[in-house]
Length: 407
Image (tube, rainbow, N blue to C red; front, side, top):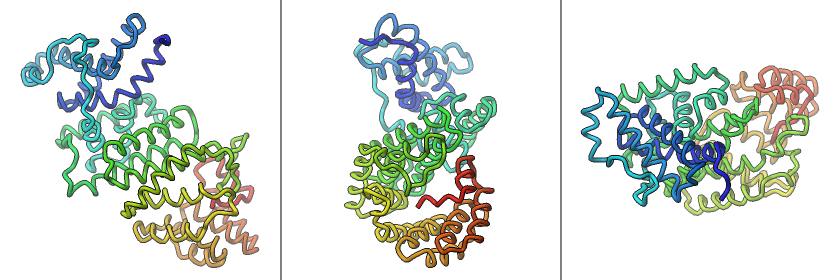
């Protein structure tokens, strides 16, 4: 058996904490109590496991120990004595955490917690932070680092969000079937935002970890909601996007656009998994925005070289996506695909109809199309405008060098 150290316990904490917190919130109805009790349980694990060895069921050990720790906290607080009487029947007094009576958290508890974290009464910022803190197992400091704010600032945001849940009496439950489509949308959006935050610069360890956390959350949702095709679509989209991560930057950190990436560096196992999910989505024939985005990425991943990309198929998928999500950004991406099928002049006509003057990718796309049409002076001005609006140094440098858009 490998040595049990703090790093191993930390990995188990990251994997199990969301499950256990969700179960304790169901039992005790108090987010703070659940978090504190889980922290107590993992502190106990750090003390006991190195000496006594890993229990056969670490998740069950943590659940039982955290449940007992929560009861202890209630017993020590006189103001909670009435609540203690109510919960006593739900949780027996101190069990031996290593005994066969260890309990696994109820899977649906995590699903309830995801919908609680992503309730529309909370701001998007609060939804993302709570999801990472409660389900992703990130510490407050890690969440703060990921979003480039001070730890006390993030701590206050989390406190306010939890107070809002209590004050607004946000229910800890999965929405009813007729409410599910509207309520699922922000849940998927939050997971996607977590991934995008991980992809942004500066790419420190906390940010890189966000991409893995987003994929883990998407897998969790797919396991808990196997009949929701958009959940599967989001998972496929994240897997296919993640498959290209190693090839997106050069050795010096410079940006490498899709058409110039070394495809031998793409992760084929992620691509195969993502494409299999896309095929299953196609068989269901219930298209949604995430499924269509995943399908577009699957077409890119199928091309042995950039020149062999099936642009007519991508353009057709963008036609469907624009019908479902008629946003200017989708229209811009569709125009790029049209440019590959019908030429840069046709694409430029579509791009110039859009009102995206403050979006750097709009100007970068115009610059590329103008350059391909030989209108170099106009292209140079568009590249400068794009660089001035670009959010990262890598993108600014790329655009100031007259880079091509990442078609």
